[in-house]
Each structure stands twice: as structure tokens, then as C-alpha cells.
Length: 227
View 1 (cartoon, helix red, strand yellow):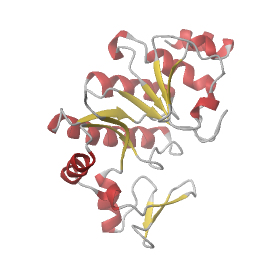
View 2 (cartoon, one colour; view 1 turned 90 degrees about the vertical axis):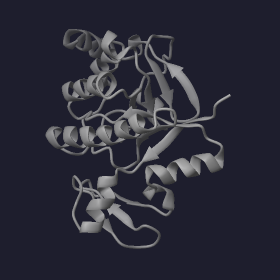
View 3 (spheres, helix red, strand yellow; view 1 turned 60 degrees about the vertical axis):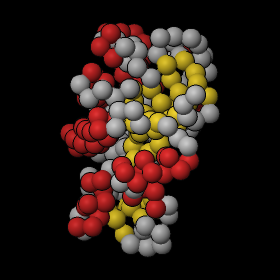
């Protein structure tokens, strides 16, 4: 039996390259300090890193996986680099850059890595397009999402805006791809969790699926109109 780690985050190499050059990466600025220092985002939030693993090269990651007896990692972007606070154009550029990097790792080591895409959820149309590209062109397995609040947030990601994205994830082109919801996202939706063709993973704790009916009626009607 293979051991698969479905919660393996990646800090993009471009983040560290920008830090070494003293440049920002989509508004994220590195500041020296304890451990690996901190990153200050354009949204004013500060995130610190202490584990050296966030700077691992793919080869170092593989060696660490071997040492832990992990056969496969499902890669996804590390908090806080989702970039949901960016405008739509920047958010889309960030998502494409990150997804291309993850896809390159899955192509080079296809038996050891699989990938989940990050999406520019501040623009639902762009998010749907990037999901389609990530799955059908790059070969990623699905998407990884988070939310700033449990209902609606400054990034524009809400129950209403999420509906078209989740309906798109059931489309033929994306083969009902799984969507990983980071811890806390379960509160983001109605409690009406039911079986459907859209696999959702809530954090690292439970596997659940949700019918579009779990969303509000008005959001669902609009989603169907969009799709």
C-alpha cells in the first residue's frame, strides 16, 4: 500500500529568489528575522517561517519523503501566498506562475508528485479558466482553496461567487476534479452536505462531497446562468 501525503505545501521558488534579490513577489516582502524571517503581504498580514523544509528543493523534498516513508505528495501552495487580495490580473498571473511550477515538478517526478492548483478566486471567470487550464493542460488533479472569513471577505470569494466555480469543477473537461478546502472552509458553506459528483476535501481531516443545492437558491440560479 502506498503512503500519500495530500497536505504538502509548496513555497514557490520565485518567492525565495525575490527575497534574495531584495524584491517583492506580488506584494509579498521578505524581512529578516528568527528562523527564515517573515513575509509581509500587501494585505498587511505577516507570516513567519521556522522550518527549513519550506526552502527545500525538489530533490531535498524527495529525500525527506523517503526518510519519512512517504511515496507520493499532493502539492499545493503554502499560506499566505494565495494572493486573493490582489487585483484580478495580478491574482491570475500569480496563480499561473505557481501552477506552472507545481506542474513542472509533477512532470519530472510523475510517480512521486501530484498537484492541486491555486485559483484567482477574486475573479470567478478567471478562476474557472485557470482551473480548466490547470487540469486539462498542466495535468494537475484539482484545486486548493482557502477563505479569509466564513461568509464573505475582501477578496470577493463568497458563497455567491463560489457557485459557478464549483459547478465548473463538475464539467466534462475537468472530470469532476477534487477541490481541497483548507481548515475552516467547511463553515464557508451551508451545513447541507450531500453526495454529489464534486469531491471536496475539508482540510486534512474529513472527506466530504457537496451538492450545488447546499448553496443558496439565488446563487445557484446565477451559477447555472453563468455556466
